[in-house]
Amino acid sequence: MKTILLALGLLAGVGSFAQDSTRLEQYCTMVATPRLLSTRVTVDIDYGEERSIWKDHRVKDEEGRLKKFNTVVDGLNYLGKMGWKLVNAFPVVTSGGVQIYHYVFRKEFRRSEVD
Image (tube, rainbow, N blue to C red):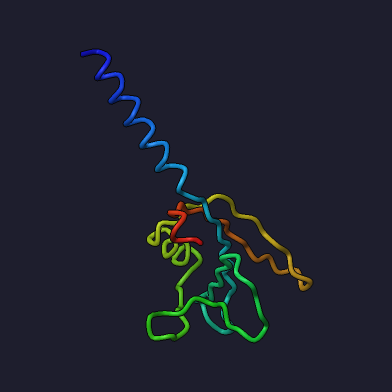
């Protein structure tokens, strides 16, 4: 009886290990920049895709309109609701001396969702 229970335990462990190996961590960076003459911010999220100066990478709503965030925290909460976890935040100083914070997030996906 103990042998059967041990074998079942090992099989359950192998099954859970196989599930874990099919998951990948993905990262993204969120940059929030202040809007001109407004208290709101514009959020740009970099998922690591190829960038082009001809394409707008700012966050848009379901209808394709630019999504407006009230504050940086509003943008952080937006990514949190989507399942992303904050890893790090760091400032980048522009040539004009303005600090713009970059926020790095991590999320786990099934391999089939990423490939």
